[in-house]
Image (cartoon, one colour):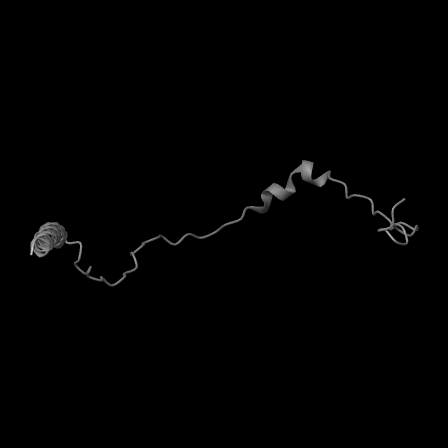
Length: 106
């Protein structure tokens, strides 16, 4: 009988320890749920979850006066531009350019 009573006490102690752990986990879970709930309420009040209203795009009204483009060609009549001489024509080379196979080493 003594062996059974010792085992029974040990079993009851293990059960008590197990229930204490469960109660502790329940408290932690309750606190975690409360913190998450508070964060969600604050986010909701700040407008984090609100869907922004889409406003149609409008082109800005830009009023620009019409400008008439005038080019003054009088600068082409200056003497310094009249004194310019054209380059002499460069004739093409009569030699064959490069080597027969440029990828071969020297």
